[in-house]
Length: 420
View (cartoon, rainbow, N blue to C red):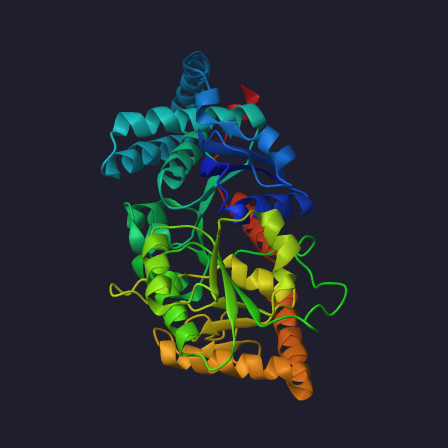
């Protein structure tokens, strides 16, 4: 098994638990992981990530003196490669060409920070670099891999592709393989860079932490629902509030999360007189989700498509509900078969508050009847089965581990770093 240098933008970031979940699952596959962030944030990590938090390195931890000493050693390696006519020279030249292609950042800055990452590769004897997000982590990861003569890959998550892409095609063309978290992204990457190996590996759920409640907690509960996520445009929250107002059934919902739409949503709730039904409980931790998600009758995630055509790629919270056997109400954007389908969720048309109200009424009717309860158990059972087969962190990590091994085995550059 290989030593993998993981490069991410910032740590800790409360909303990016999928990265630490993946790292732990990759380590369970037998790999050694060296976690590196470009920027260290001064805030507590999520519960359960304390040991990983202690291991995280920041680029600022690599001193200028360390880089200078490493640069001297690296210069000797370059000289040896020149005398031998080694293929490693082509790899170094590729690093310079790639750095020059990056727009909005100087070539000097890319190479300097890439050398910092390359120093960590040498120091920890890493054999592969994996980056999350096709922004600076991918830039520095690819540069460092080429300077070090090892393989490199990155995972894109949506915002780096559909909202603020940065020199994406250049990164696709210079990686040894790329991970797409949804099939739509996979298709687009293959079109943009047909020669780059692209694999579809969704973000996985830690089924050791997210699992069904030991007892059936749905009996005797009120019709209390939960929305969980960032209060942003792709989540369909205005449609959700309108749907609650249109529902015949008596429904309450807790909206857990924060974001740019919070004030507008609160004003919408006030205008519709829904204070008794819609409660904003603010951002919550992963520990809160693990503890309380099964206290609700269902998770409501009415994802929509924005006016610009932007939509979510594969939200982890959907899969966490599936892992916990919590009924999911969502839209056809997410229930198109890739994650859910109409056999394992309650599905409304996206951007359609009337249809969402219809589906919520149907859910409440199912909750109130014996045969409806049986239907709920069947639907959540199918969702849980799909989760364990396709979306558990260990299943996804096994796929990624095989890609790491394959990329390293297929890389032809002879590296001398570990012999210096």
